[in-house]
Length: 101
Image (cartoon, rainbow, N blue to C red; front, top):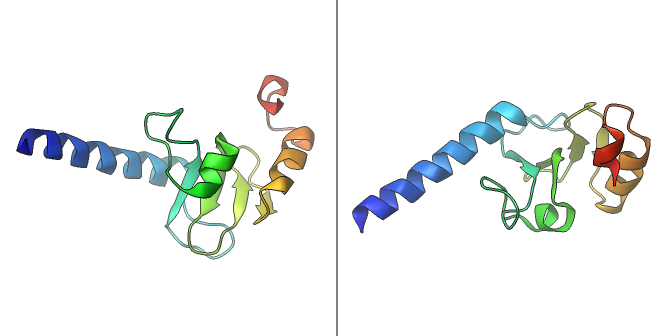
């Protein structure tokens, strides 16, 4: 049993490390409480936050402190409205056209 807990703890720490390396701090407030918006249901290290569940987009960053959403490909701050992400996907030149669907 303790081995399973240790494995789960190690998995969580690995996910936090990957998020810190790939997402970085919030461009709006500087907080390190950030993550990508890949839903846990579809990704191995994805987030369990409600915004991530709505978006399920690995190339969008989300700040748990201020709510900012931003594109991890081009760096543009999108705001805190989930609906604005779709518009960004349609117009972002840094995203491959296959990723915009």
